[in-house]
Image (cartoon, rainbow, N blue to C red; front, side, top):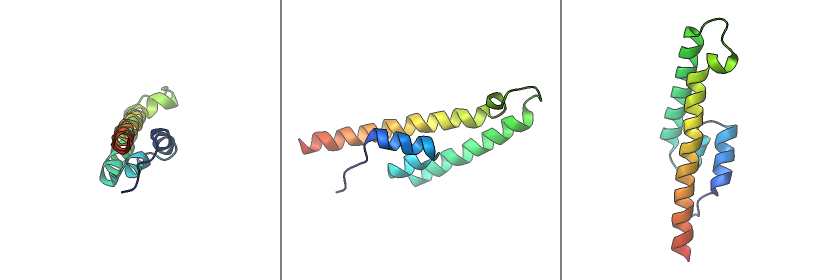
Length: 89
């Protein structure tokens, strides 16, 4: 069985390409769901935000889901990595 990626590598991949951390963890559907909701909530907050709101505030919904996807990808990668590491020892 193939060893899982290091959690820091998964976190870096998820930081650069949203949703790809979940794909690297073997959950492509979960990554696609995160990406879909990131775009959906980013679009909703962009449409409903006041004109004088900053860029971060304008896309706050999408950025929130992006942050959740980073934590989720790292958490699962860390869990898989530790299980594989302890199983080999």
